[in-house]
Image (tube, rainbow, N blue to C red; front, side, top):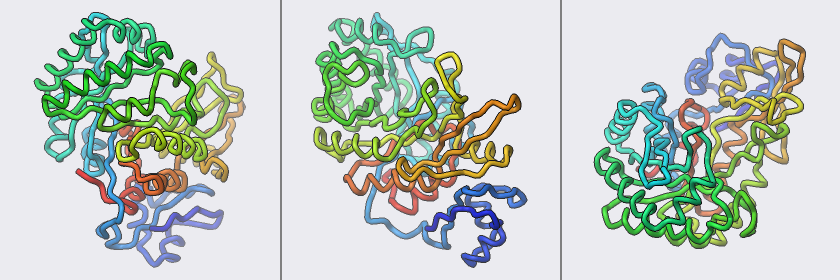
Length: 382
């Protein structure tokens, strides 16, 4: 596999001639219109014939989070690259009941497609409140009541059995630092019930580079305790750059690696799924809570650069592409996203730290270059 960075004189035809591969084949693999003008700084993945069939030394498990409104086309093209499909989500209520934020017919469709493809469907349960936000107060009420947690676990189990789920993923975010012990206790209680009934259990937890039991975002998550309880952990190694903050890489490689260094010192690497962002942000400059950036797909970002005739730059420190443009009101905007170079750098960390694999947020947009690179580097365990 070769990653070609487009120069000012490049065309698909000239790239194909350079590598002695039909340019139309390159266009199909990267899902580029052969008639499109290439963007200076854009990446093109070159896969020689047969390379995807070569066994890799490293095997990985791959989880993809999805909303159930994912298009059938995107879902069917993505399932061959997945081990787990985590369907977002059921909301935990303070009385221990659960409420789906998803249309049952869409949920059933996605579960059925996953099972048919040999992918394990996973039920995601979150502490999202009725207003659609992760709620630390809601989590506090649930976690500090034995009767509520017992009821919640029982309701989760019944739904999993009825819906043909294979596992549970707990996505409780912004848990209060004071709830550190009860959160771990809840996971332990849920794991015992899940394992007794033949299900796996995983959880999604925020990234941190060191321990601080009082940090308002990460203090509740005891990496060592959690790693001893669940089967898999999704490390949310993204959102260093986020909507309301200033423009920067969403997942700078240094921050990602520092998180892995700490995490692997606390829990078995064989349980860690490193988070991969399938998105970037298009920020106003400056960004603020009242004027946030918008999430943008990685393929969409390249199209935006083409539309505004902007070259794509690459920040070597964060290993991330970016570009600047001016909107229709002549306001400066800055876009940071992921491309073939940035994802290759991240994917290589799984082999370096002997991780279980990867977890994508989300797979609702198809990202052809990522899947080409992933398959060229690893065998995916079903």
